[in-house]
Image 1 (cartoon, rainbow, N blue to C red):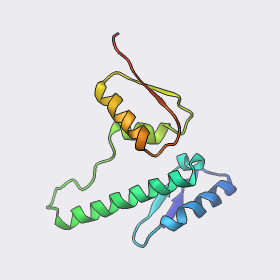
Image 2: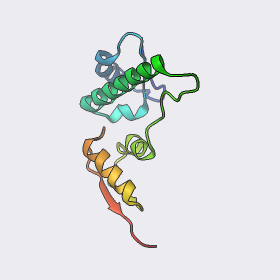
Image 3: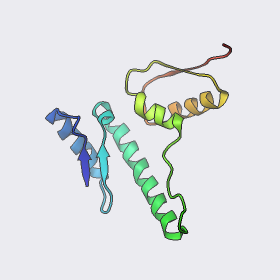
Length: 126
């Protein structure tokens, strides 16, 4: 099934999201369409739903062989969540203070779920 966030109140937007997401909903799996999706393109929604489906399939495979107490899934790392949750908000630049953060962000922004150009700047010094 699929649920669209109650925070999306525009019926035209809700209908558009329903139409865009419907082809990706599969038997035995559910999706929650978050408010960030309201401004996403069809390609972005499709990529995100395909990623979530693959992640779910991975969790199911791990479940079949896991022993009690095994962590089947951990949420995305901080950098992925940053891009996922804020890239759609007209962010023009992200300033980071670590080489690892800079590298991770550049990788995500080059291949991630956003088509927006965001500059990554490495802050050095105090």
